[in-house]
Length: 281
Ligand code: KIV
Image 1 (cartoon, rainbow, N blue to C red):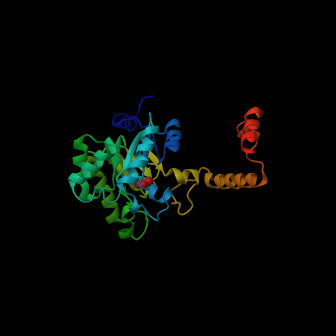
Image 2: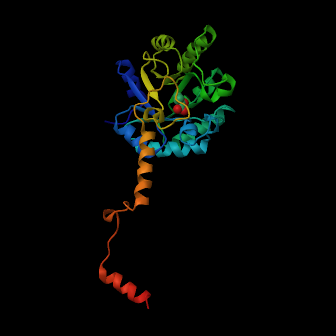
Image 3: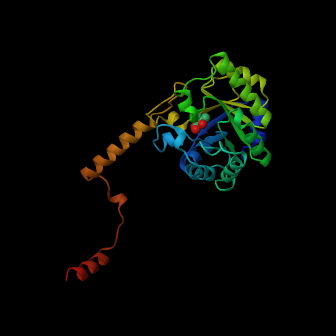
């Protein structure tokens, strides 16, 4: 299997094959996501929360995201890797947005970028697309706007916010976005927009009517307890497994069970005797 591209992702949508996407932030996790045959990875700014322990995504920086993106990109020979542009990296000017998008591609070697584009950022989407960098749009809940929204809330339940979701998705497609993420949007609304668009839609809390599904890996694995959105499914309790494992390790070290002989290096008696002779004089 060769690496996914804009073309193969579009072909999946055109052939009604569901697209799978997960977040990843480090090499070993990305490798497993890649090997599991997941089509796309988002190196989300959610790493500020689930990896770095910040209360929201606003503290992610270009440097932080660049390191995570580079580690993930090194692991993926099949999965398409998308860098999430952090808060402050695309708000100031078209030129600075282009420069930051290019940094992700040249320094971290990702396959595309995603940002929480509002109508103010359509020109920036067009500019990045014109540079030849694939762009994923993001409508519905924008976690970077958590302060303005008064929390991480579903978007599109009333006419005003639903209109915003539809018009932003259409504008992003027009600007050249090759896929659009629908976050925390009523299922009926994302299914309706999916029908209207010709590019794939990816749901994270957008219901089953999208062209694909995305979840945050730490939610899927049950590794992050501070906040689990109601749309996320915890497939495992890896956090509990880690806690049990670290507790067992501590108990075995204190009881003298670890390290055993099989975890220790051996040396010949002659060498030891020579050392004792020299240092016991
Ligand atoms: O950072 C992230 O993981 C995201 C998804 C929630 C879409 O932006």
